[in-house]
Length: 387
Image 1 (cartoon, rainbow, N blue to C red):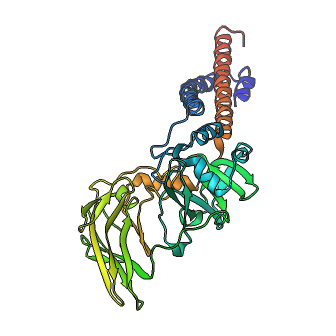
Image 2: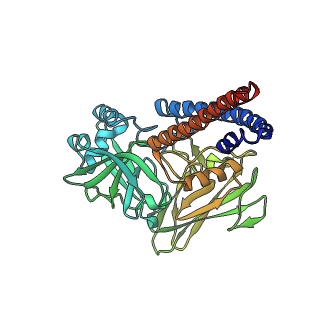
């Protein structure tokens, strides 16, 4: 368009009005592209800050972490290992992983597969979901207990964890998860002796009723709803059996508080509610109940960095069987779910794309400035009679 106007101007002086209109449009484009350039530059600066000083997730740690808040590097992990912090050395040694094997691990990604198990501080699944507990001897004295849970039962198949991948002579493939210090294995480690099932012969079940909605089973909990849970143990044998009533409420208490403990004692450290152990006679059953109330304003905290079941907009509790009920989460959580479906491009690709976009914007801005200058020269020459 610009070349056409200029080339026909000597033969049709009336085109000077079109050139004036074209110059006015160029001034508007110049302002628009200058603004675009400013915002693109600011966006690139902010993107650079996330590279040199990455933000920490609001939910970066979990009570399930073997190392609270995770580790920053493999060297940091080894430093904690040498100090036996959080029983790291005792735990990894009992599994069969040596320090040299840890030091030889290379950076990688632990993906969620059907046979991948992850170690947790506390049990959160049932034995029917293939969760096993293991004991280890503590250097400071006594015996510690940790739990191996199938990763596919805790999170979706799209979830991955940054960490380090290694190979052990006695264990085989293993991974160290950066965000929690936990070890990941292929299957239940053959190097451990799983503890026996403490459920004995009593069958366990848990049920729930939404008192605010007068509904059982299928419902979506809302703000301030009251939910009554009932634990039941039944002795279906002909012998007397022990029945410990203990339920872990860590997942529920992210969105609720205990309204009525039903006579149970709550341990704030382990997030468990427990009652004294009882002896069940043959064909006898007993129940325990408690009530929780959802918060009046449900938090929009992001899903846990190290524990994907944390703040996942679900109330999950297990006692023999597993109960999971969705809650009416804030809109921000639905946006988080959409972002989780997007491909993970990494910092390098993001910065590269930002630089490419900035280069294109600068090109068009400079091109507009050049056309403005040329138009000004042409109009000056036309008015002075040169053209």
